[in-house]
Amino acid sequence: MPAPPRYKLFGVYVSQPVFEALETHLHEEAGVVDLETYFDSTADSVPEGDPGGDVTATLLTDIVENFAPLYDDAAFAAAGDVDPNSFVLTHLAAPPQTVANARERFQAAATIQETDQREVHTAILAAYFETDP
Image (cartoon, rainbow, N blue to C red; front, side):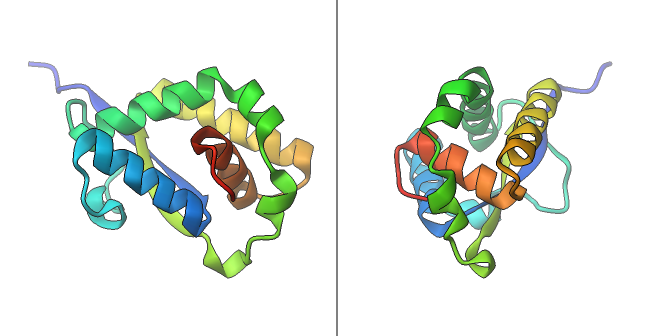
């Protein structure tokens, strides 16, 4: 019997306002009460059908599919002004290929912007949620 399909976890560093927007989104869409502890940070995957996993899979798929316009709308300079010690590590779950595509896009954006992943994660997700970085 084959193993049930699983989502791969993808760690992102975001500013506190972006984390709060993400947490609100997951609470409204999946009933997730505490995003900080929702996904086991020692695990590398969660089963498909997990409510938070399904919501973040949809979110990450949407980000990958709309990366170019989100990149154009991203406030990279504002993300660069975020205190480096205030970024929050959180996890998203999505199909393995979506995670690979997201990693590629975030890395390319970091190279183009000549910055680190924290600022790129924050700027892109802030653009997605239409919030300040």
